[in-house]
Image (cartoon, rainbow, N blue to C red):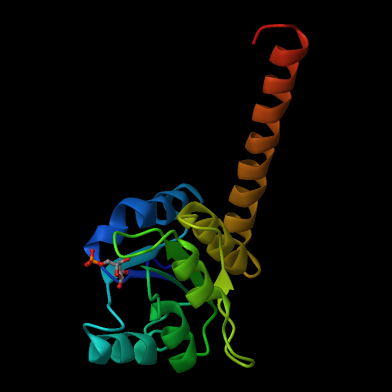
Length: 168
Ligand code: RP5
């Protein structure tokens, strides 16, 4: 039987990131992946960040989603500590000028330490990508992803039909 231990760690720099990051929590639930959620700040709790990243793999996590805004160092610093794949979510936070600061500080990592950066505020895509990583070795999550994609396609087909029939 499949364990219910979390395989995805979702972290964010502040509780103020939660309204964005909740989308990752929800889509992972929908796709049948077990996740844990907490706050870890690279700047305000560096020791906590270090401990979290250092123990992640031995605690059973397989992928980490990290969201932060402004001078967003959390995803990159976590990626520098663990060998697990890290997906970064740039958040347009209250201290962000226009979102570009969050995007660039997560995206522009040096050679050797990649962070898989999704679009601004795109925590849902981060969740889907994390599920896709798990699906490589989890048949149930793979099937759930196929169903999810079929549903997306169905919605487009329905919209196309509506528009073609003049029902817009
Ligand atoms: C970042 O600063 C956090 O990830 C958040 O996006 C932003 C603002 O944090 P608060 O001032 O709302 O706690 O480190």
